[in-house]
Length: 405
Image (cartoon, rainbow, N blue to C red; front, side):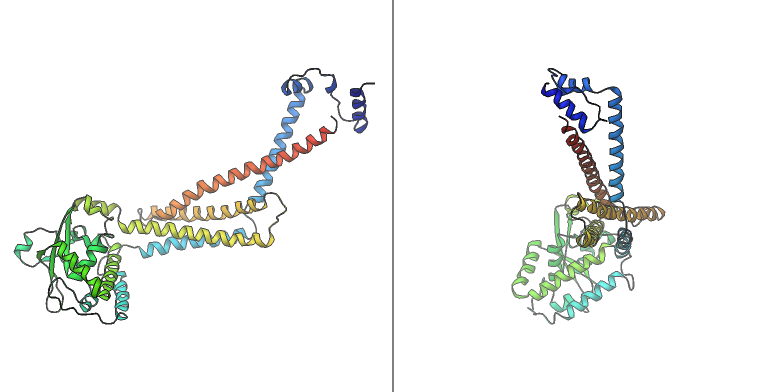
């Protein structure tokens, strides 16, 4: 009796219900494909395909069951939605457009805050300089800034056509959010106003009455000399410099969310005043700050929710289960993704009903990015989970079949 015949009889004794294929009778099969063509019928192939479909569906359902929101996920989801909606409300409230000099408005509150800071700074050093010099007391007691002056001192100054009334914001470098840190601060220290028309920069003195009120645009002065005079204060009068910087920053803050707004950094250097004003109507520095603050706060909330939700895994996670951490992470990502989508959807509806006002662009950017990144993670995890499950099934089947060969 041949060895092949002995193997066949042994297979039959192990399981008489298994249909024995005569593998040992195949000579020079040539390839795996030709081998299966010889031992599998169409019925066998259809049966194997149905078994594969059933296994795939079962494992897929198992994946969906393990990654659906459950238990503590639901209350955390509602907390996340509430925080995101609160974020949108607070950001919109803070950045609400308000007319300048509104009594009891944001501008008054910022000035009150400024006064409290200046009260703590004490007295400054009076250098007694007659020109291009604003004393510490003048800086901290005057409500406005010199580059807000709009009235010319006389007809000769009026003929210079520095700017027209309200558009002084787009003609003065002090109102530029970045360049203003240099020119605006220097103007405050020297009682001057620096205007520009693209790259053409001019500086004029600002004249006050005896009560240091009613500022008027005076004679031209050298911009270089003005900057040097302001720079000299860094050596001997740092307290006045600090007060000027604080005043500059807070003045820009008071103008950010007024109807005219504040232009984009450097816009007046590359555009003329009319175009700078038009551009600011569409997008301003205040808009950029609002978008950035909203996106940053939305991200911070997502990180906080992720940390809170992830804490539960530390206490009752099943580390022995395959994909335990990944499956729980999938639920975390769903909580964050759903909360972002719901908050953004509610904002879109509210904004549409109000004519496009208060659109949360920053939050919408974060929501879209989360949709792409989280969906990609979930898709990849589902693929790996299903293939891992199918591999286990067929590895077990192969191990069983291998016993017969």
